[in-house]
Image (cartoon, rainbow, N blue to C red; front, side, top):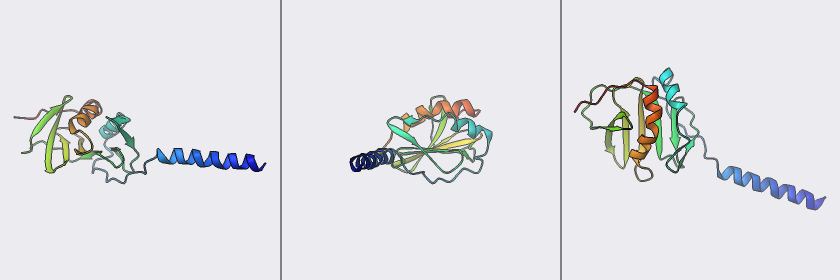
Length: 151
């Protein structure tokens, strides 16, 4: 009986250690002001389980997503739409993104001319912005109507 109890304790300890090592804590994020927009629900249900090698994490805010431990890519849908900007605009995966590099090496990408708008923040020391945008393009493109960057 003593041996059986030891095996049970060791087995439970091993199961806990394996389970605990694979679980990142829930990430606290601030939802966008229009996070309850049905378009954001369409974006979120299409988010990939991984961006490159970074696994999707749990977040505590509506219409958000995060990948990596610590979080290297963060997505928020439902931010203020942008129709005019002096920021450079790039097209990745048929989605036009404004590029804000003012906090480099973290880059903020915001969809251009889409309602609801989506922002993606990428720590370029841990993830590729282009790769993240390519892998998120399907979710954003299929859920929100687009306008095209000018110039």
